[in-house]
Image (tube, rainbow, N blue to C red):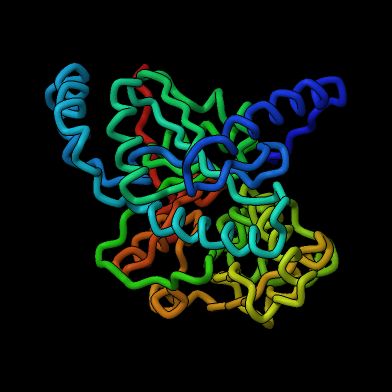
Length: 358
């Protein structure tokens, strides 16, 4: 998922274009670092409504229409938009980039943030002004004028897509791109400004939903028996596995400089699994992938919200909406991954689909 190959025939042409772009950027009188080459970067695509709080603007769009919405944005383009749910995450990505550039001044292996929005280009001025107001390093934009931007994600070599639109997120996952729907926490929490903290659920997020299917269809006893029987068989990958892999690649750059204890990236596995009954298969799967997780927290069905309140991640990924709701109630920035059999259930109960009219 989310992995793209670049052919050798296109590499030389791309290199020439990139050198010209680099020369142009280096001649600009700006303190902002130039963006990395997309094929080496970890590219995070964020929608305008996740990066900024656009609730009032969205209300105009939905209640009055697109023309009045664009007019309002133009009239207020000198007023910076307020930070949205993804804003702290983006700032943390920039912090990691600063550390990477200190250790590897010429490296292109950095986070690259892309603004991916279906906004009209006229709205772009306010978005640019807001980005400059907060001194964010976002140079690549995709504004599609009302069309879905999903078709551009692979062209931008996207490793992770964050949006407020669950339909677009589902579409991205179906295209093989790591994606999640972001939710704004119900209270503000002060987050770490020196370390990016990312928390993942396990099943149907890092791993496939194969074990979760057994829980839902046959119960916990069958699940425990299944996990014990297949303890040494790695789970299939889930939609966010490639993003954890990308984080691990950047972490290893710090480890290579003897900065493991001072690494600005920290990852957490926060799973409802029980450690003794079903935890070994999870840890062995990560080992088989060659991936590390900094902290593995097995909750045996206990609520995740209180634990996440202690971790204070910049983003927490889960496939179950009741975990998302519990997290955001306590101030965690949560992102829903609409993947797997869990989407057909709410708090363990099957959601009845509306009957089709004959």
